Amino acid sequence: MRTRKVIDASTLSDDVTLEADVAVIGTGAGGGFAAEILASSGLKVVMLEEGGYFTNQDFSLRESDAFRDLYQENAARKTKDSAINILQGKAVGGSTVVNWTTSFRTPANTLAHWRAHWGMEEYTPSKLAPWFQEVERRLDIAPWTGDPNENNNVVRRGAEKLGWHWGVIRRNVRRCQNLGYCGMGCPVNAKRSMLVTTVPAALDLGSVLVHRARAERLLHRGGKVGGLQAIALDGEGRLPTGKRISVNARHFVLASGAIGTPALLLRSNAPDPEDLLGKRTFLHPVNVSVALMPELVEPFHGAPQSLYSDHFLWPGSAGGEIGYKLEVPPLFPQLSAAVMKIHGHGHAELMARLPHMNACIALMRDGFHPESIGGTVSLHDDGSPIIDYPISDAMWDGFKRAYLSMAEMQFAAGAEEVLPLHTEARRYKTWAEARTAIQQLPMEIFKAYLGSAHVMGGCPMGGDSRTSLLDTLGSYRHLENLSVMDGSVFPTSVGANPQLSIYCVAMRNATALARRLNSSSGI
Image (cartoon, rainbow, N blue to C red; front, side, top):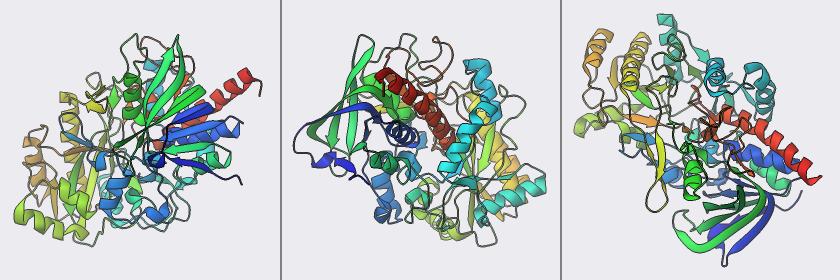
């Protein structure tokens, strides 16, 4: 095995210039697969990552450590108006290091919508199936065979009693110890994240990894990218050290996520004749309902997500009212205390009952309804990204219906009390009481607690240059040697946890790119 070439940019004493066939910016779900596939084809790859290079030995399972080291903006990233909290990873491996391992293929209804409205003719379930199968083999993705924890069992019990759909979630794990702390980084390397799969594989193939390096801008001229400029960050990954990293390459792959990639292209003044860059950014925004159960739940233990319900995901047609996917989140003390919009003794009493608490979330399927046009990524004066995400009446209608669905399911599962996370809600003791009260709750920002861990869109693929910046292989239409391989390529939200969709599309498009580059170079 070769000696792995890893550069911690925080330790640089001088500026550095690197040469490569391909520069991959970002090492998450898209960048990790792109790097491994390109390197395995014989191409020289340089990977750049803004976050640090942490391993399982660094994962203390303490929220304060994880939020500081592994999340964008210490897990406090928000939309422009601060109405929606956004959880995104920032480390070698990206969000795959801290997600909850939930792995869904792109829904057939989503693919049909993309073909009908976005010209993505090749994106059919049958044509994508071999790519999904290969990703699932590579990352050990399979239905969770262990017993669901009590937090997830609420979905099964409630859905069965009500006659709703429910199913078992597939997870990317091997020899999982069922600890439940996936969001803090896996201390036993059971999670098949990019940190333990594609990134080390690319390094073993001779790739170079530079971490704590923030990509600042692409240098382009005459329709072609000539280089990348990045800045070194300090040991905490926050402040520039003054040292610079320059990368010269034949081709550049952007995989910094649906906020980071549009921001980099905006800082670079990338050509965008149709004014599409950073537009139609989607979040799967979620609202939350908490239930107090008579039995011990321990929502901080066991596989975080193992059951789900799609009963309300596709109401009517894809273009009808906004649908939502029902799942549960794990509940840890620090994050739970922050999102419970109660004060004083009421807050203390509720937190004391955390071991008996269940929480349900509803993931809004944004981007399909005519009023659901998503948000916009733009730049602060210092070049850092900001996302504006106005909430339409159609989205608020989805949130209200979701509050009702979650409460009904929780009561059907045996909840003693249900508390929608909303400043004007209280703890309800019956479904009838909750139904009447929820219908009266004002749907407004700062009253309904909203969050997201899924950012998509802003640099969309498609068959029409008037509505898409990328072709359906992820090539940027206006810069000949630039590709994008991350969640920003989707023209709508996925309608399911997006990591497996990103893996699949990145594998497909990186394989095609490797063939093109090797063909043009004669390798």
